[in-house]
Image (cartoon, rainbow, N blue to C red; front, side):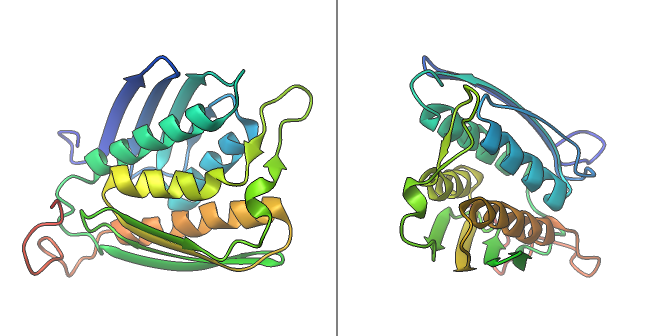
Length: 210
């Protein structure tokens, strides 16, 4: 967190599989600069930033000549860690967020608790969704549908939040994934919002970091 009290974080991670740079500002306006080399994932992270109203910079370079998996996963790791750092002690926050979001025929509910305890429950995707490849045309790198659950599990684990995502309806694979990111964004936005009536950490044990 910055000296001015804004909830920010900047993190880097480098392995033989990827180089990731992430900047987050939880008190932003939804501005995003995203470049992962996986076009569909860029679209989802842009959507997350816009609807969570956080400012987000992601620059990722990975072994996309193999496939998108390492780059997508490693980006989610660093994003989760950055969210955790930016949240700080969570004093004055609402803590819980719940959003149900439609996108045409798709409908998704996401519930967030910035509890300090990592957990993810992800249910309801239609059979076959995990095998669908989104994007990847004109020489680009495709995003496999199975990555969506993995992204949410990874973010939840590294951000130390509890996250439940339920796909309630959906037919179009693109809509099914995009609605999940939007629902997560809106639930996260509510959970991290400040409650003017909350003067401390919203927990009977006095901490949300363990």
